[in-house]
Image (tube, rainbow, N blue to C red; front, side):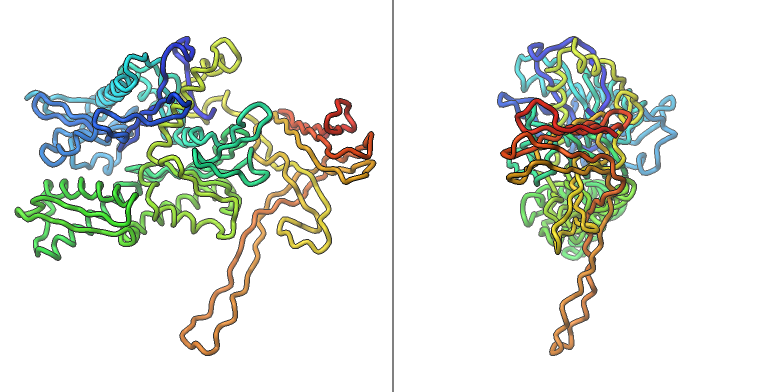
Length: 595
């Protein structure tokens, strides 16, 4: 798995329940495996599955999560939020934007980021670590209450792809102090992929069967085990885009881009500005810059409005006594909101394009886009992302059947269950227990050599074929794609022409390229003078053409009644290729070659 771990206890499934935790910068969530074997996100005592990463203090009262949100209006200096990304960092590393907030100010405490608040009439300094311990302990207690008596034997926590070793260590230390047994930390995009079980075989010798959650649609033929995937994680404070090669349930990151300038807060701000103008237009009253209480009220309601728009076509924003004692009620429909959010959606699309460029891929070479993060639920973002990919593409899917704000926690629970079910004495268990808590890119055990080019079967295309995949009369059928971790073994069953006595097979490496076809626009209507001439359209298609010939096999068949040929391809760790062919059901090798 693509993560970092160290199993700190000997455990089995009978030792108790395991949980997954997504501790986001804006919201946190907890998931566990239900009685049907599926991952579910746990609701807290207020019925909330998305819990604001926020703590507030008022006298001797402590408010956790969403209960702390109203305190931003009444008692903002004693509200601590946006603390997660401060873990494991020094105060001097923080940007002005990270320090600027309407809640408790970030201060320097012996070089570490901290907050000064009043608790029970006493001025108290809490470091980011102290706050994280308190919040994680509340999540732990929520899980314990939900599981009512079942011990919690361990947890898997998600971390952003860009987290450093110091940040991972700081999160683990806070979770451990909060009472959790940390089994593993896993990169957020890997958790999203694990939630879907993307390209993971459904059993020995079986192809993956559920690519899209519960309401699954079948994989396109030939794409069951191998898919190029883009994970778009749009959270509250930032957006992360990761390009992944998913190969038989093994995930390799090809590129990752972090953009801290766009997230749910930017969408909230667009709504805040819109409603503030509406208020001024209706009442002739302008909300002053110094009226922090009014802006806090509007900010809280704008977030609720945004969430409502993810599920309906219109939503209201109602604020009692917004400014100068005047109430405000406004509404916005989804079309207007998408216009307001357009610049943010454009930034996310640009981040996707940047990540694809770093991965040396074109949009037409992407098979799937996975949505994660609360803001990714918005239909306007999905519409904007769909513009990046070819309209006629039948393979590029934007997948969000698992709620985007739940998918990471659920993936962590899936990984926790996998660890719990792995005996500690076998090879896999020993590997899990030996992995350090570091970014995946820095863990030698998680690095594997991979194919740099695809390997496949070369066929002569029928004369006059208009298949876009045909290059110079040859059709390349990919059997082992690029970026497949080594060693790899693949077995295919190829049909044999009726009555054939022998079969000639040619295998080669391939060169991946993009074919660009220019489609001329339809002729303009001469009677309509207002019509502007249309531009020619460029259509891009991913194409693989044969490069170096590697292996040729001439297979003599024992009987002319053979219907299928079983071909096994093995590429070892040093990139040596072995191809073996036998008639289906026959143990004897009919032909073999190595290169």
